[in-house]
Amino acid sequence: MPSNLASLVQNLQQRKARKRQHLAVAEGVRLVEEALAAGVPFRGALVSRDFGDTPRAAKLLRDLAAHAVPIEDIAERTLTQLADTDTPQGVLAVLEPPAWSWDAIHVAPAAPVLVLDGVQDPGNVGTLLRTAFALGAGGALMLPGTADLTNPKVIRSGMGATFRLPSAPVSPDEFRAWVEREGPVVWAAALEGTPLVRLPHPERLALIVGSEGAGIRSSTMSLAGTRVAIPLTRGAESLNVAVAAGIILHQAQHDH
Image (cartoon, rainbow, N blue to C red; front, side):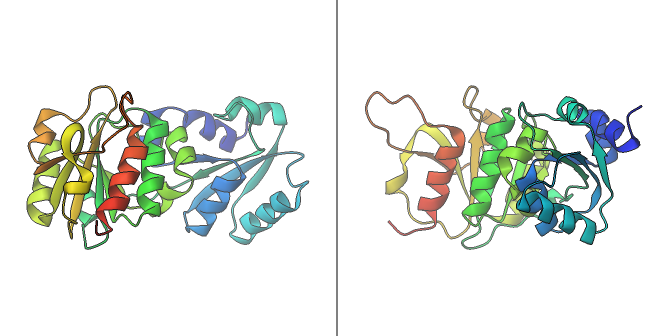
């Protein structure tokens, strides 16, 4: 019989369960370390029976114990069945991810806000959050159609950013209200737009990015004052959305 914690991990593979219980699963040594460092509340951790054989794993076990996190040993086969990756690292943790509200996210000088409009790929969403956090963003807003913030792949590719960068889902009407309240310069990343190097450095910026397939919805695009493009070498079709966002966010915070 699986333990209650193992059953919970299995249940949290479903988005509805994660949303209902306000829980997520962090997998792997680095992510569990990041969650502890960010002060995220834990429900418990599952570890394979040979976990702790390395100094780093042994330290993680001590740190989990020091934070009073319940730890359960399970068979490696069971952990592999519960894991979302092909080669799990022997540790899964159930935690309570931060719950930010869209109206608590603010744009400020040198702290732009990233807006994701229907970015469905969870790997891209996590990488976008990781990039935005690394470049000093003030937060991220997730319009409908964007991958769930508690998706295991979002959390893994975010490499801890989902625990630290204020990020929240937002409806189109709420986003419009947010733009009216915050009053940022709003850029939309687009293949056809003003070259980035020709645009002045905005003091307060909101940058909208869309899915690589469908792009930014027209209703969202209508809120952007400028379409911004990254000039590419002839023959290059496009950039990955997270790479493009990183270039624009970095360049927008440095005078040309």
